[in-house]
Image (cartoon, rainbow, N blue to C red; front, top):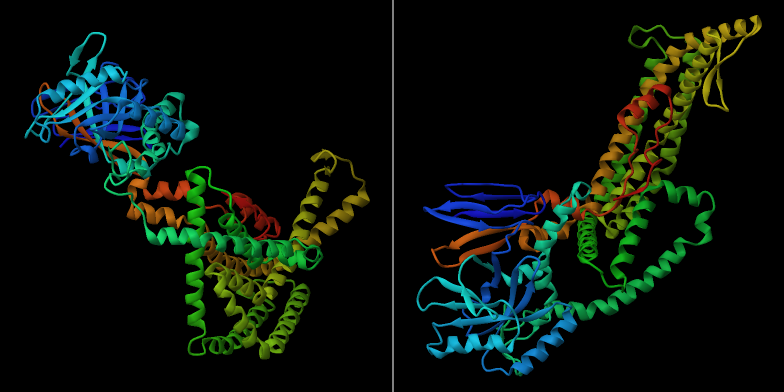
Amino acid sequence: MPLLVWDLMHRHCYVNCNELIEVVHPQQDYCLGFQMRGVRLQKVCCSSGIADMVLKVFFPSCCSSAESGILIGRWISEQNSAVILAVVHFPFIPVQVKQYLSELQRVTKVNVSVLGSWNNSKQEKEESLSEFLEDLGTIFSHEPWIQISKEGDSKFWSCSTLQKRSNNHREEEIILVYYDQRKVMLSCLHPPLDTAATTAQEAEDASRLSAIFDTVAKSKVLFMTDKYDDGPIKLTHWQSDGVEASIIVELMKQASVPACMLLTFLLLLISGACKSRMLKFWPLSFLWSKLSTCEQLAHRLQHLQVISSNKKAQNQTQLMRKANIFVSLLIDVALGILLMSWLYRKNRIGHLADTLIPVADHVAEELQDLLQWLMGAPAGLKMNRALDQVLGRFFLYHIHLWISYIHLMSPFIEMILWYVGLSACLGLTVALCILSDIVALLTFHIYCFYVYGARLYCLKIYGLSSLWRLFRGKKWNVLRQRVDSCSYDLDQLFIGTLLFTILLFLLPTTALYYLVFTLLRLLVVIVQGLIHLLVDLVDSLPLYSIILRLCRSYRLAAGVKFRVLEQQDGKPLRLLMQINPLSYGSVVQTYRLPTYSCYPKDSWASLCKKLFLGELIYPWKHREKQD
């Protein structure tokens, strides 16, 4: 079967068939033609260049077996299209139908009217029925009057239009498009992702297809009536056999109201405590801004405020964002509870505490061995012995202090880990952030070594660069932020030469210590970066959208595709409209939740420049909200 696809996300339109005649881009005005079994099909249009002579009738597949009656729907004059929404059965009173449609227009804001007649001749054998259906066109003023009928046992359908002014039947250049009413109503048509490159013509192409989806989606009130309702009008649509509902969903809706009220009250208390003046004083303000656990708790607090808000979602994007946050919180807490249950089984907390002290001692011993190696002749390099001994003993003293601190805290480590493990009930991300902070605290001596070495190295680099400008008769103008010419006397040049020589010969020793401790610091930053990468993945991944794409892909539509069902000379072309879902990459890109990045925004060139000049690299320095 030939397949015609209209993809809004990539704005491609193509036909897949054995004998392809023409494939063109939907941004142009065109009529797409192709051959199937020797039959030439002309003016199959799917873009802004839709021919005015071609009538498109979108007919719900659920009404194929409906009894005879009249067709109600929306007429889109700009596209020369008719979107059929339901079939009204006999008997009915025309005045009551008009009143019902006017009330429906007031509620849905959709211009719903009677578009034509529907004749299922397989069920209705009377010869006068077709004439009666044609006479209904004089009661309901709509032009053209669409007449769709089923021809006995034939699989082909007859679709024609009646022009009241000329009183002629037209049976040519009509396309009958079947669509799944339920899927179209529940789906959300997504515009192209590259909106910056989208032209006005491309936006118009997307709006033409979205008009069909919006018509069905806004007519949800029409689909809330079924054949069991005691009313003067009987309809056939996708819910005519019974309104789709779930007792579990209704009970959850009723229970969510008091739960949200209680959660809102608790969040107000927590947010009020977080905004208190106590947290604005040092060192609480410093810890709150630097610890990743505090950042994650504040981030989750914002998520809870979004979920518990009584403000109704204004559009599909806000609704999906709430659903993604809710599912992300549920999975995060579930994984945290699983981690907590694993930690408290078989006394794993005690084993972890017993392992932590020997590991800290082993790391300290390795650092001592590294410093002893640097204080000798590392890799055969000749170092400045006096500076080498001073730096080595300075760092060894810090390691001695660190070991004493660890052994002083050893009786309380198991209790600390026991209470820290309870925080996993707040979510896996909170537990990972606590792990990152513990790694930062346990490697604080490495951070101190890195800061000392970086400051000393940076001082010498900037001193050498300043003295190098002195030799060339230059100086740095602080006010104008540029290098200007300057004349120096002999004493200044002599002192500058002595200082330059001293700094230059001391630079290799300082650079070696800086290089070693920078590598150790980068190793710790990489470990923390991997932990925060996992936290950001859990925080930003739109799990609800991915599950929706996996289970009900039609809910996330990127475009539509048309499959040819039947075609015969003198009969309308019958197509089946199917929803083309978003790709998984587009789903993640469209519905990714905002997160707090803990990585520096510097480029690789800027990062290498900072490392070369000895400037400090803080992982938390550029912690800002990103979309």
